[in-house]
Length: 256
Image: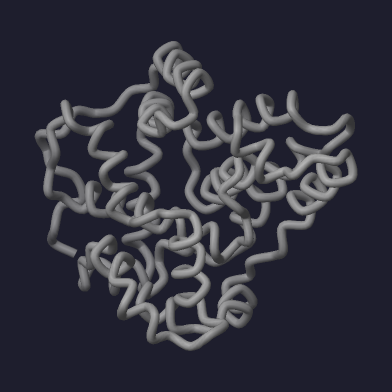
């Protein structure tokens, strides 16, 4: 590959733990301010994004994805095209998830743009790779079976860390799990659910390497089996413990 991974004008990122803690506290105070997630991760990840890109580039699939240089949000927000995929496909499950939750790929981009509005952007492979990780986040929910409740988000972050290392990602996942544990029934394995997500991410094929249009057309259960994505049993156990305590987990955890 002749294209540079990183624009030489980029400043080398450094770890800023106190800044990360401040942004995480802001997120706890207002969970709707999701830009704080990006700030927190950025403050702790250091060179993790670059190391991930180097691993990505070293694979045959990674080279194919780079040759395509596809920007995913328009593809993922073309709901009329996705609606043509058969029932039971990844695309059908993705569409149902996004429409049920009132989400769009463009909406996630908008949240991210709040984080980057005062940051110089560079049209290099590192930026494209970072966008790809961002834009496959909601697809991870569909493939893994984790919902959009707070625990589901924490488990998806754990899964993401299992796929691509980064101190910022696992910090948010761990601290988020600690906050959730305060709300959960006594003995609920909240931290174990997050760790299970991390373990499952490590065991699974790297989702960012996948041909996303082809993946959307694939039967969901077949895709999970091919990619080695295991069922989220501990997450489901926590939800069951909420219900046994007379609480609806999606409501309790969404409210916080």
